[in-house]
Length: 171
Image (cartoon, rainbow, N blue to C red; front, side, top):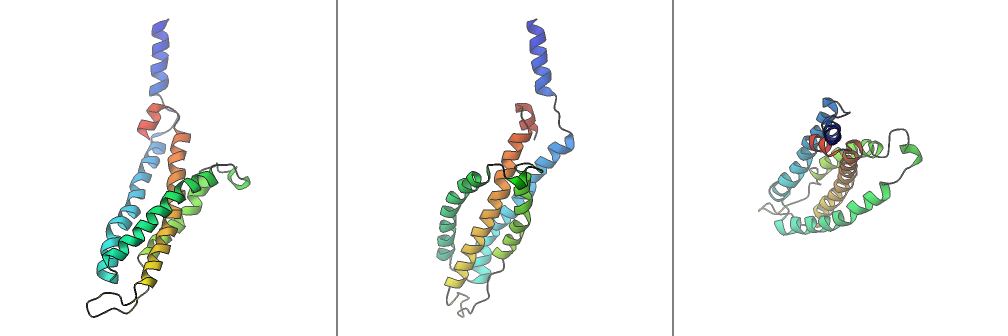
């Protein structure tokens, strides 16, 4: 009888109720998430310093303020959206938030790399860096807001959908 219980446990662990395409779609998200965040993280410093003419210290200040915002924004988004709303019953608690935030996330990434064109010194440094700093800060706040909405709900959706350890390792 002990053998039957162990065999049943192994069968439950190894079989999955989800198709390969379901696992593939969840795995593909990680690649799609990495592209905009890596672009923003890696290219933003170069772009704002070299192309826009914002000094590195100002960029660092904006990123530090954004990090504080992210520390407040992430748990707040999770707390505000982790409940059932009337309009989330049809599609589930997670998917509507992902669908709502996906397009604004992409648009806010474009916003980051579309700063106002302001006059510069002959050395290429901005005469008045404040408008560009505020633009960068606002666009990072907006990007982080929508990226958090997508990322938090995608991560939670994975845990909601894939219940067993084996499924979570695959997905």
